[in-house]
Length: 334
Image (tube, rainbow, N blue to C red):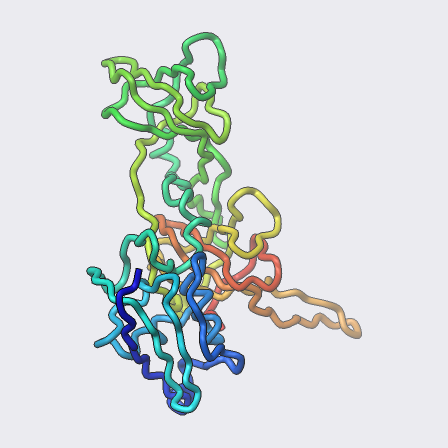
């Protein structure tokens, strides 16, 4: 696969790191690491840095030689020279076009975060404004009297404006801001995909191609749009943005590592793809000698924003040390 090895130097002076206090090299950073299939940039950077979300600083310290850290492949070797405080990437020759912030994943390139954990969620609307959901075309009947449709069944809907694949959804729970009590939208439940067989004029005809949940009469249809799995460049969310976890995708009570959660910060508040938050437990108060004492609120996870809507965003939990719950707060990552 690799025709030749090119040594690329990343100038990581250990003295400089300590002085700048921006990157802290781990004491147990490996002298040599071979990149493996299934690795992520977050994982690899975590082997060298106490704060793996700072990997853009790690990779871009020699921009003339390494222009984009997302093009690292299985078989590449990271070599740490502690005597000089430099990290060398031995990489095969491969010519690719790079963009500075976000790009579509290469099939072999190492991804930023576990792509398989979010790929399906990138292909679905997830959150729809109440007015938009109410205006979406509805499934009005099946080929017979059944109310639940399965793969291969015929469905009829209100007239659609285009052919192709449409996705069936039903209303899920309302997302509410815990502080202002504002309705932030509805988290919709995906049923499956239907392909149009006849647009018609007053009624459209579709066939169920696949289903993961029940597809029922009355479900709403949203046109399928291909969304690529993206490679994100992380950066800390602004210090004053804050926010809270308001929902855990899948309806579980405790969110663990690689779970997706919803936060009450969206594009309206300035949230962006790649923002990293620290997740902190809700403050807890105990009685000590008859007085209330508030316990410290530790950081229990780091949240990586991978999808942004107008009023909410979805984030993937990384480096989780305790379960994350609805109501936990967001702050600067440690």
